[in-house]
Length: 250
Picture 1 (cartoon, rainbow, N blue to C red):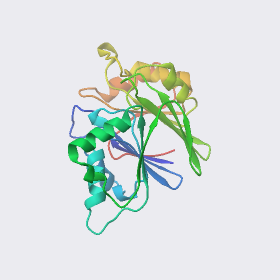
Picture 2 (cartoon, rainbow, N blue to C red):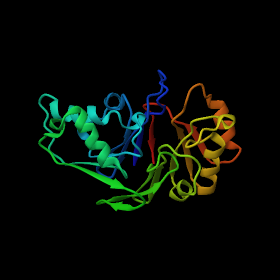
Picture 3 (cartoon, helix red, strand yellow):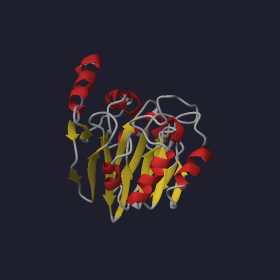
Picture 4 (cartoon, rainbow, N blue to C red):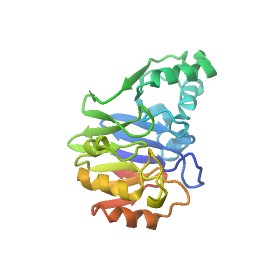
């Protein structure tokens, strides 16, 4: 598996950090995990075209995680000389199908009058299997139906929390993960419900016995030294802060 960080930031925009978006190459598939603004451009900057993406996985419906869905659909319809043929499956939490239909009601249903099949699938806490890999989902503590994902392939595991507060579900989902990508939004002295502080992120990684911890969804003016010091008070494994356009082998 190979993970590329397309957006390590949040809705509070920073020049060096775009909103949430991650590219995962797993088996023979190319998957997009969330798609905040600028995600498609970042894909191109890393050498992967949106044309190659097989599946979209969304953790929840907030705009800093979903806003590039419409540009994705629009691009796959109107790129000159390109006609997508392979099926596109869009996965999301409960309520995502209605969210998708509401987007089309604003932008027009001709947005998906295309020459390929689009399927929208809602997930709760379940396991879905593909040819050489599978995905496990679990409910997160953020918006009402937010979910996190665990991807497994060839004996390796990668877990992406999306946005979440501290909960047993993320600890269980991340059990002995080779790479745990956790949000880490606010300092310990500025706790916001539904998001993680560095100490909480470190505690999750410790309880889950994760092998590597990568922190994303960083709000300004959060400093890297402050984050790492707090995380290491709980977790003594490998820890780093994600940055845009970063590639990580799993």
